[in-house]
Image 1 (cartoon, rainbow, N blue to C red):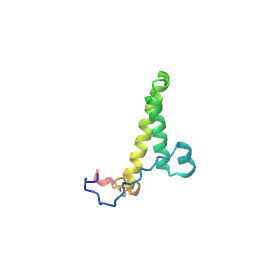
Image 2 (cartoon, rainbow, N blue to C red):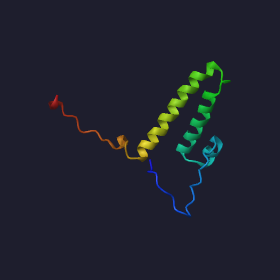
Image 3 (cartoon, one colour):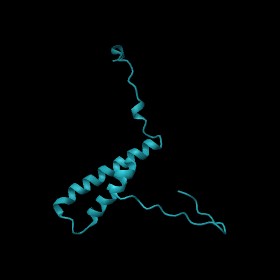
Image 4 (tube, rainbow, N blue to C red):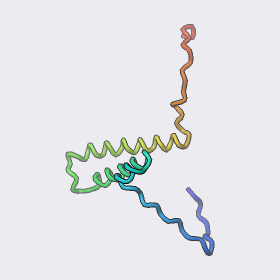
Length: 96
């Protein structure tokens, strides 16, 4: 998180980026952008009081799955998840 600071006289605030819709993200976005759009859409349905109770469990489960997928992408981008580079060593029966 960035520290708070005084702004310069001619400094303008950054323009907020509008998140892509599911359709926009599917056609022109990255996998992460698509997952974020899907997460937002599913979260809206979960929060909607008119969502049928029979659908709520599946939507909530899907919301958790999408969130985990986003976290995995973020971890990989941050270099925290290098498990794909792991190689097995030769088996040594004498070590048992």
